[in-house]
Amino acid sequence: EIGVGVSDIEMIEYLMKSHNLTQKDLSKIFGGQGNVSRFLNGDRPLSKNQILGLKKCFGLSADFFIR
Image: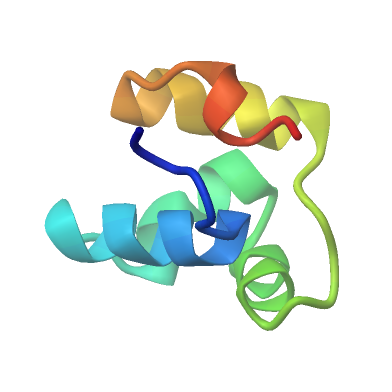
C-alpha cells in the first residue's frame, strides 16, 4: 500500500521531486516559503488547510496525510 510507513515529510519531498517543484512552488499552499521550510524541517505539522491544498495540487486522498 502506498504511503504506509512513510512520513508526511518524506511524502511531500517525494511529490516535490517527482513533480519538479521547489519550496517556492508550494508556498501558496503553506502560506509562505518559510512555512514550507519549517514543515520539511519537522518544526511544524500540516494544517487542515495545507492538507486540502496538497490534496488538490497532487490529486491525492487526504488519507495520505491523516493518521
